[in-house]
Amino acid sequence: MANTIFSEEEIQQFRAETKGAAHKIHFNNAGSALPPDVVVDTVINYLQEEAMNGGYETEFKYKDELENTYNLIARLVNANPDEIAILENASTAWSAAFYAINFKPGDEIITSEMEYVTNLIAFANAEKKSGISVKVIPNDEQGNFPLAELEKAVTPKTKLIAVTQIPSTAGGMVPIVEIGKIARKHNILYLVDACQSAGQLPLDVAEIGCDMFSVTGRKYLRAPRGTGFLYVRKEIQSQLNPIFMDGFTAELVGQHEFKIRNDARRFELYENNRALVLGLGKAVEYALNIGIDKIWQRIQFLANKLRQQLKAIDGITIHDFGDEQCGIITFSVKGIDSTEVKTKLFEKNINVSVGKASSTLIYMDKNQLSSIVRASVHYYNTEEEVGVLCRELKEMMQ
Ligand SMILES: *Cc1c(COP(=O)(O)O)cnc(C)c1O
Image (cartoon, rainbow, N blue to C red):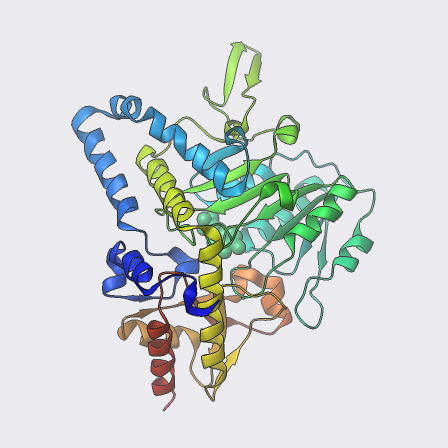
């Protein structure tokens, strides 16, 4: 694969279409990627039009484009547009699905050690409020999710399997397609946190076999901050009771009766930021035009390069486990606190982030990690940038 995924001209084109790439080395794509200029311009222009012509009037003018965001997201994940709700972030999207499930005392949830903090808080909350219990399947010694253990953990009381495909603070991946087969076989609800996955690698909800699936816009999708979406499989929508409803979500048919919409927008409310919805659509379209397959190959190529080069540096420990790894590279630098590493790199114009134990608590505690440095690569990064990062890290340790 190597350099042939994109030509040098194509990479220069992506960078030319991304203002930030010209003056920053941005390895914080898992935090918030640099958006393409077309995304930023779309949002700004829409806001200008609202200011000039009125919010409702501008919405009317752009109604087809706004609607098209649902079509684009549906294409991205191989769903139908009526299975998509656009929300303001992944935590809202995930929670909208989770809290809509009718748990009964005694119900069980199965998850993995890679689960994200929002989700773990919701589980703890449901344990207290609904009398459910949560089983965590630890990874095996190689850092892989043990499917056989999941099979063993399923009981007639298992109501939900909820996993995160790509954790926030590790480069490994959870096998969501194989887990989906087990969920389907036992007819268990299946909720996937694909927050770090969307825009990074191909996603197909039919292949995954999930019922619900949450995503944020600002990370690998390169969409504006404050955007996200939720997929909910058509067949299960009516089983879920949205917690928030307004006159868009439901129709009040009498003082004591209401009828909830019969599409995934039952999880939205009327008011949202239309400019951002349009920006999200543009970001998805931009990624689709480049090709998610190619994006994923390029990310793996750069991630491998960075891991190889980091491994060769004395004093750097890489923490990513598992057979399959993604664009998130996590490591520690001997004798230097992760936050200080981040600050020092920032002074050199390089953006990385720090992963804290609390964001992926079960995994981090098990591996006795309190914080790690996280460098997350995207397709618009270059091999030269990877080289600069490694050089600066070496210098830092001298
Ligand atoms: C960032 C992240 C989230 C939360 O996304 P928000 O848009 O900040 O709510 C959820 N899951 C994972 C794995 C994440 O990395």
